[in-house]
Image (cartoon, rainbow over all chains, first blue to last red; front, side, top):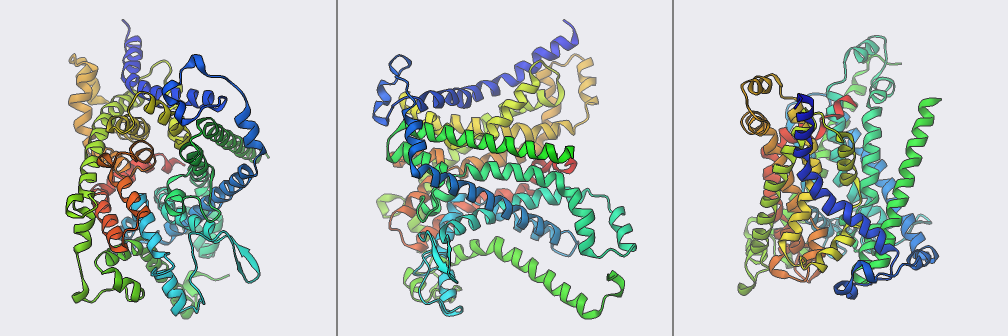
Length: 305
Length: 291
């Protein structure tokens, strides 16, 4: 047996356990979700489900596209994903730039800045729920005594509240803020890694030529961060778009924060409807894929021109 | 246009103050909520409700009984977090062992060997990593119920292994790629087989990386909530820490007990993170440098 042939066989043998696990736990379920989306099947039917007794129809999708719920949930999801992505990129990049200049204790501050990202999501959601509590939470207490709020704000169950004559989606902004708080450290981590390998000559030369710190940031540092920021934009959007834990743990979908992932869960568990849960899940995946395709098209056009 | 060297004094001081303020804000935002949780957990509920603003309790008021209530078993009036911790430790450790075995083999192949289908396997792994977990949760819930694995930690274990293997494999591949191949080539000339090379040469050299990856996998399993909720919610004795704490939040449990529970399940994760922080950072961001 030649060396290349042996390497080929060994390579395939070594990845096969992983491929097997992934086929069983992800590829087969993906096929199943497509199947379920086109059938009328509910949780009580589980003991009787088999390939031979499924009847196919597009009823789940007809209902889904006709319902006003779907449109509002989709809008909320896109708003939530966009705001959290932009917010976490902005905050994470700012933190990375601020901590770029060396100072005593910088390593410790950098480690502390990662804490929101490593905390168990259930623990951080529980802590934030206390902070935001209308009766005894610190934020409402500060608002009442220092900022003169007349009545406490129910941060986690207020779809809109008028503020200076404008309707503000309070709860949606709160869950968005929480997600930015939790995910900005990842952006910070990646941007810091990129900053550490930037060549310093360009910046030094620009400084000698009289470019101020803001000009150096705008014309030298940020262009070099473009690649890593575009990657993070993509990853963060994909993850925020499908986020279940954070929204569900904070509000359960109340206060105008029902996103697609929470809706899939509600259809499955509360409404006990496997078919419509699958239809929601599949539609969610399709929307995500379309948005990704648009992103890549827009990027390619930009590169071309 | 201002040059750094000829800036007026007050301008510079102002910038310095702003910079220190931003760093203080970063520290406050990162650590503040955790400290608030710790402070709430040692105060009686009545004190919290009456004086929400005096967040630092006088030493005479400090009361650790919430920890006993949160952690203690149900017979003694507690909420049983210690038994949930036992479940989580078992599931998380088994996940670490299985994921490490799978991902070491796969990562070695990805870093060192040329084989047919390597590209498609890569695409498959990345897709699984990015695919919406909630969408797969629907059929997995149905399949697991059908074969009777809901209410069992085995079903959860299988899913955790599948969900963590791609990211572990990616991290390990970067560590392996950084190890020089010359030792391996020498060993191969001496007649060492592929598995022997992995076991005797690659594993010892990559041990720091493997430890960090293992800790990261442990954290993911320990923190996981959605699948635990779907599979185990009916079955209280099998709850994991994340599910257990979330279920407490839904019930009418006083704030100090909730905070004690949050602090208790956070400590192992934060301790592990600080122990291996250096390795995580390099493992997670490998590739970003090229970016």
